[in-house]
Length: 553
Image 1 (cartoon, one colour):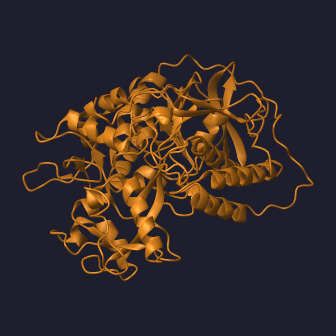
Image 2 (cartoon, rainbow, N blue to C red):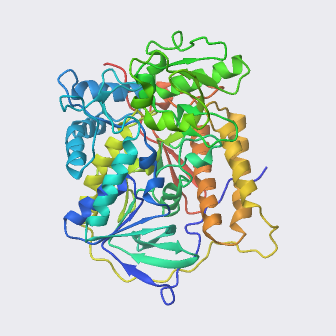
Image 3 (cartoon, rainbow, N blue to C red):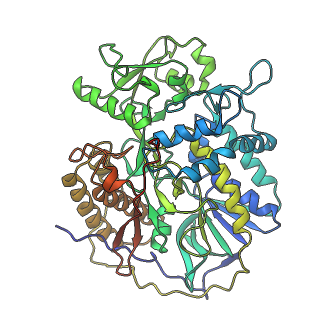
């Protein structure tokens, strides 16, 4: 047995004498809706903003989002109803006050995006078309180009970034470490084309997205490696709810092909799930059938795959009233590439890792437990999503909290000159065996899928932590470069996820333990928190016990 992993406070030192330093008021790490919302809000105050992203803007999770933005926009809907839907899906752990705060700002967020230029779909009368997705009791999801909402939002906010003279953008800029001085986050060290560049800032906003790439099956783009969560953890920030990873039920599954999300709006329009024998199986699983919460549908699909000895199930669109090619043009185009006519042929699908519900613990303005450090979007945990995220609430949260975060981050004090730090943690060892990083990455993704995936137990989780610890130890002895840092971040977040899952001895929302199959409100209606201890080990804490928010008093 290898001991528990020891995590350094930084992956390398910083030499202020030799490293170029770039000055800005607010540093934003990430270019999705949360990061851009924060950057635009900070720039509105007159402060200078630097946005850095390790990928182009079309490779963010926002750009890949198909569903839309959930908001209360009609008389048949209400804030109370949207809040109730969110709390119900959140399985008792969503914070009711946080949820109401975000939901109340849904209509304003849609107006803000529309004013920026987002072309949401409208009917013949010019009214916004509203879709319905899993867990929602009414149609309240605005979308663009049918199934390409994220791409349209990313296009528009990207143009807003480019047109704001107070904002500078650097792409293909990878953050190695956050920089702290006297307990405050004061900047970051970037890796660009193999060289280091430091950024000095009064405030740092981490909005780098999720960590779906730690799983073999995922809907996320290649850059979703958990970098931000790992960076904030090393910097001493508190994290929470890392055991809750949402798996999307319907990912296009063709052996050898890249996984592609088949949006929930397809099931909202009437598509049904069938097994290899054509049997529709969700009717007997949940009253909402195909529109049940995602964790329910995902596990039902996995169970049916096991029962039928198949690698996938099928999504049948033949009963949809509209022309599916026009309603879902992106899905139609991708499927056509594999000779699937979605109007007639069922789509082979299976679950894939989709959204990291847990993250860096923040308030509704993105403040973390580290002064000067903010986090927003998928990298953060505001407790709106609880144990399971309601579909299309993530873009809403990113917009609402992102704008508030940017405005507050802009109020940071004047930055101070950066001081050198000594690299005391890197274990550079010339005797370490040659490491095959691609093999280690594939092994990690397979391990997480098998043992920290849809179904978990203590034996598998313990073994996962031990293996991750061993790999992390070897990797820390090797060279320090972008690939090794990214893999180190993935190992870090994987260890955090597995550790939190081992400590939650119940089943709730997206977290299902085969050895503890029932929900235990008496012991576990509380958040599990994680932080880096002074010894480099993961410190696990339990938040205060609370009444479940999904049960009527």
